Length: 243
Image: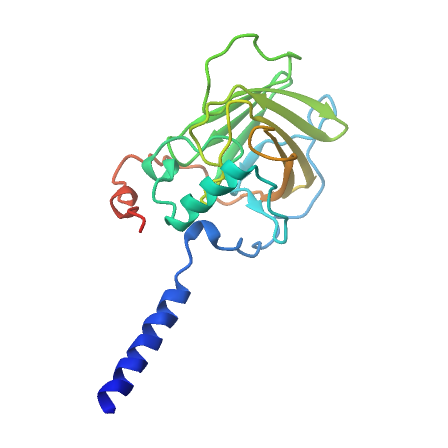
């Protein structure tokens, strides 16, 4: 009787521990941290909002709806999530692509014709938003970060990006895409220290309708961006073994 009781207790304990294990891609977004510093929006000489500065990682706002995926995409996302994101390319120091939320700091450098986004994390990479052309190249190789052209709509910078490869994941859950992907990003500096970001993912071969994601970033005023190279001392890949 005592042995049976101990076995039952052990089974219940194992069951409880199993229920506590949540694949990282299935975990809900963490609550937003504190807001950035208050104050008026800085402006450039031509009157445009100046987005320049060192920004903390883009954080998804809580309570957003899940994307409406086509069956193949839903099946693949489920498989990747339940496998504990073991094949996540970013864990192997491959570029995160667009519009994966940036967990590290990123620096925005704004000029009248070009906006640069410099990434602290992963492979210390960058993106370019061209303000001086209205069209994408007619022919281009599939890229990790695509080709981005930008325009101002009032005080909002709208970035249109195409020309992607199909290798990166949108998030740790493993949401996929095809090379038909188009991403529209809207950057609005609400005040001195807070940036609102709206991302629209358009890929009819993967999603039944455009997937809209709302994010927020806060200005960092106390530190400078540092060098971080994922490939140095990377211990993630050895542990990303799935089930």
